[in-house]
Length: 193
Image (cartoon, rainbow, N blue to C red; front, side):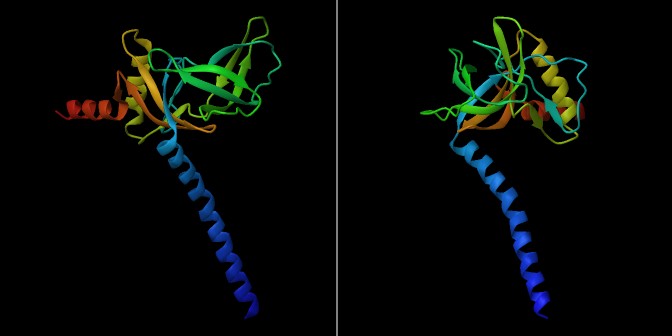
């Protein structure tokens, strides 16, 4: 009887730990969305042959490279990207560092994707928010709209990202200042009629 009580208490503790971890992850992301600074990352065209993988749209960003002084950076190395806004209100990279920035919360913990071998050394950044998840039935429409928008010179596509103390949460994707979800709703209404 004593062993059953011990196993029961162990089971309860394990169950609580399994609930605690995802709840903390969700709460941290919600805190970033509520308290973080919003940056508009202008998206860049993607390779038209890039296959659509599941229930998300693969995003690429214009502000993903910076010139650095040396090539002493390693692929997949953790870095801190300090960001600000340009004169048009879009995110721009101020600097990158291997050390945690001080006196600012406007930085993103990211990874080195690539460093060129010739001077000037160009460092390419892999952001943690390059996938826009959505309902499976709407994702193919979103991918097509996004691809068209990034290939047209007259259309502006950007991702609204909340940033706070290294964490970054993708809030929405916009095409000409309209959320892509609203555009999809309009397309679905037209197709029904």
